[in-house]
Image (tube, rainbow, N blue to C red):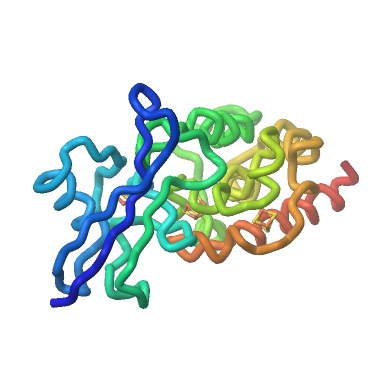
Length: 234
Ligand code: SF4
Ligand code: SF4
Ligand code: FES
């Protein structure tokens, strides 16, 4: 067991004129997940603490937050892994705070929708199924695993300063469909990606890669989209 101090961002726009931090101390096994810590605080110390969570196993993407300055999922992070006994937990940066650790993801989701995140077909519907070979299916590895947690976009300086920039999460999703052998929607998606708010605005700083809790590589996706745009002479 080890003593930890958790300093947590608090802001209720209905009550608070400005954000503040509340501190909670507890003695826990360093293997304890941050999500368990937050649940303990909410259930045993302060029921007003607001944060999103659902699956508690790195699948739903709802509990992205900023911990000691780095974006991560609370359900995949053990308190002892952070190397410090003083842990500061804040909402994802660059997104408006709804309350405490809950951010408004409406704009993030609108950008996801803007890249048409679904298979687009122009050919006639086949009788049986949209066949995909094992080799073509393999091309989606490292892309389909994205859980839309927002940790990447929220760690991106371009995303912070330009409210219209689509951001690495949207680009990851766009590339996932652009490489899908069943998709025929490149001509609908590429103009969006080539726009002022598209891939050219990325400064290749790699913050998004460091932030991804699923160890995916949004910057690779961005570079691949740029190559596709150049090859197709957009
Ligand atoms: S590599 Fe591009 S998308 Fe990723 S954080 Fe940097 S500017 Fe943002
Ligand atoms: S690419 Fe990674 S960090 Fe970005 S939304 Fe997907 S899972 Fe989250
Ligand atoms: S609670 Fe679902 S990803 Fe963490």
